[in-house]
Image (cartoon, rainbow, N blue to C red; front, side, top):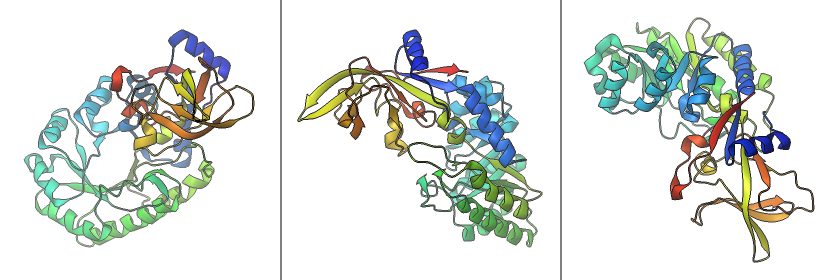
Length: 369
């Protein structure tokens, strides 16, 4: 995990002001090295939605040519950096016809679907496109269950593939996503085994699939510890070696690449003693980087180098909305106005979902290392 020192944070604060997100290029490179070591041969499609900042995408582009995109804006963002359209996969299972048309005109040829009503949208392009059918594998061992909104049960998959084939479309494989910040590697292995069963059933009918997309959701460390990464990835790779030794395997890491590669540097902008409890107001909140508290269900460690007896306090954001409270039950030593705070693991689903509410712009992003 990337961790700024307070000396580094104060230097960045003096140079750029706050709120500021410092992104470690070295940490991102290390994450790609880990993926290459523990999942060798898997094609890594960076999930642009995790953090679409152009600087971050530029670092990603140095380590993988592949991108997982979900919208016209994301297509343009990665093509601006030189990504080739043939190296993109459109993973949004539900799309407007005009969004498909735009993607095809931009050269995208790989798409994901998960229901029969989506197939008609691909008819104008016939066999020119490559489709992956997304399966659903509900998972309680993750922070965000991504099988709630998308995916078809595995037992319904063969019929959907047959239907697409009868319509003259080309289904190349299966896709799944066991959930974001998934803590149990055996959810992946169960899904991989089930996908092999679907592959075999279709092959017995003369329909041969050759691609498997295992999604993302690989965990990063927030407040709680995670299992050693070698132990997490080993059973996944073993399942791939066992069940898909010759297929092309794809993955969609986003959080894993950038999540703990970024630190947020904050300033205390005000303080108040209300009903015997200290309130500390900082210059970013739930309408900014801490939007991840709402949308991504994450807790982020806020660090101070102040000394003194710690007591319960409330940490609130800068906007005039009473909803803009980051933590109602934090514990801090006495803080002073203009104190510098550091928040770890702020790279994924933070600046990506930040807004300009109340006229406060999202935190600035700078690359370090």
